[in-house]
Image (cartoon, rainbow, N blue to C red):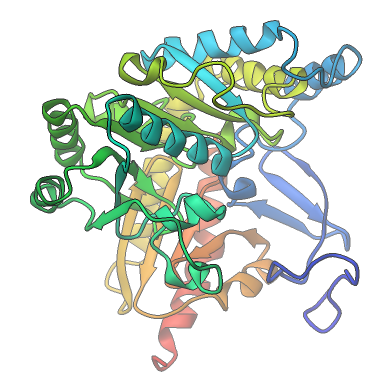
Length: 401
């Protein structure tokens, strides 16, 4: 298959700039396209396929659940919700969970919590502090919290109530809080994903926790992409030794089955009450079983340690292979969430990656993003380096546009 003969989709709304390939099946960290090509999956469905493809324990568990119940609605108790919620609270140290279907929905729920938190304290016009480079979703509210003007274009007026400051600048945070007394929450990704793999520094996160405590604000950490073991800890903020008040999750939680969650600590746990929020599909038995089995397998197979060790080796391999190459700005990230920033747009690498048998993405126009399954082996990490580095070098050898 080539770019001149892409798969035909005359009835699908053209909202995606798709690559000229359709995938057929997968095994572990490898996928095959409909033409029989074997490709190494360095994208993991955008940090979703935690356990890779066709996992020998996940698939039978989901098959078993399909024979029991797929969906019941939240009119009834769903015992698997409590089982997964209990595990998430155990791993995070937080206290309760709301289940939904996606990261966007989890972030939307977090914003509703922030607003109601303010209203419950007599603040009739609550505001949320957000950050440059942020991406929280594509609903009108999460789009308004996002910092990318390109994806906001054409969808105004945006939702008011957001104050934006630079990431990793605690002085700017304190100045914004002083200037905007209606701020009720601070909302950020622990590691910005779509914004270019930009980590919030450990000391910045620790300072945010102190500031939020001092001003009775909610610290809301979006771990939709960087959570669920991707950095080598269950949640990326745990490297800073802090706890948030609100933590949206999704992506890797169900290993491909759509699962979103908002995990709350004591300050936010009682904000939403019966009738304040809800969902039809969220927390259904199939999704909950996927989450339960994902976390169980991750623990049994030591995938946090694997993400840390293989991720460190992958980062070191990329750094060694690209050392001294003009045009490589920075290699950053942690665990199996890595970005290679170049000095020019690099979207052309995506199609070249297909030809080289490698899947990855480009985010923020100039950052090659690698978020492979957490089962990635050291040999497969070396293979990513071997396939990706020549593409990057060839691009950077060309005259800069």
